[in-house]
Length: 249
Image 1 (cartoon, one colour):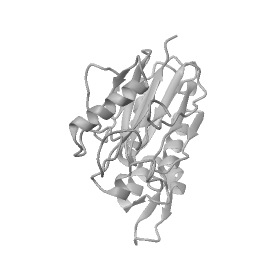
Image 2 (cartoon, one colour):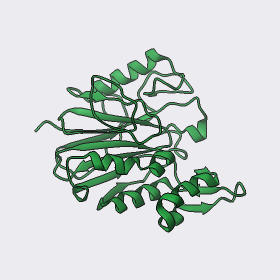
Image 3 (spheres, helix red, strand yellow):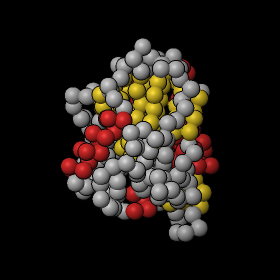
């Protein structure tokens, strides 16, 4: 708990790197966005969202925030607190600059150099994963891929994420047999599949050369007390933030 906010603090095992994940608690947004919605694009009161972001910044003092306008693509930018670019991944070597992505079922992926020299963050829904957002981000980092660790944040779990055949085909086209175990036949809808975003992300990271992949322990859909879920709650729902930064040396 930090300044009234219930922030999850993953252990990345990297000295000099901090990370947090917000939950639903500690903000001022009214239902159905209650209470710590951090997204300006979901229909919530802008004043409430800005107050929520202010509370988050007060919980992590002396740091600047780098936000993105996420578009479910593969664009990668260098983090900055002076603009909000259209992109789904960002990286930095700058101390005290907090990288942020917003999610409510999609997968947030934190990357960090093992020596703490750089950090990165991706918003990876199925489209971004299939099109290569993680690989695009890894290619931009100023360290070798084998020197990077990854942490998978809260996302919709395989038991709740039903998708159509086009999703499975998109991954089969890109990954072949490697991704088959990430899809199970749905017993709910004929011709549909249950997709495991965590498994798909691990496959892609490991194939790219990342040797350490941590996390993947939460399901946004099945934990309504902690997390927003677009699939569970519909379009009128909030967004959590996953955050990562380098500490000042």
